[in-house]
Length: 214
Ligand code: SAH
Image (cartoon, rainbow, N blue to C red; front, side):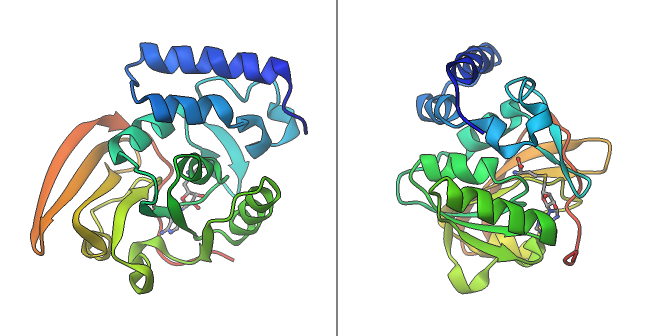
């Protein structure tokens, strides 16, 4: 599938909508305006891809709504060269946004099919994060500490392992709640055992599940 002028025009409109919704980080908006979201969806979604909505990506999962991607990425405050751990690769769209911002990305997906599909697509597009098939609840201790950690599935609680894999001063962005709704949290590691939590309103994600799914 190609990236056409029509797609580019639709992206500009989407970015204008995100600005109206309160997204102000220029780098995040620029990354969204560059990245062809339609490539992360089945061809049947070609005309819908730049609507500010979540869509099915298979295995019962969804690509996050652009507003949610922009909001989480803005909260994360990615700096060039940051080591970022992402839980829930899904379509790979959020992964590509992080890479566009110059992060070094480590991404974990528990659904085998999505893990394989995102890996193929991102590599074809010229993106090369480190992909892991596994359970994001455990994080990736061997690659820690991380400057930033982003969870893109609704977690029932804040996983201890993820907090511990942040560097001092690092930030974890995670939606926490039940299947009906989750509250977005930004958690800053102030010291070895000291964390500062700030909440940022309600969102709706597919659930963060334990173990991996073949
Ligand atoms: N950022 C993705 C979001 C996909 S939905 C996108 O915009 O496309 C959330 C993803 O998290 C799903 O693919 C789901 O399989 C995955 N997931 C849920 N629990 C997980 C876990 N414990 N470890 C890793 N991935 C998980």
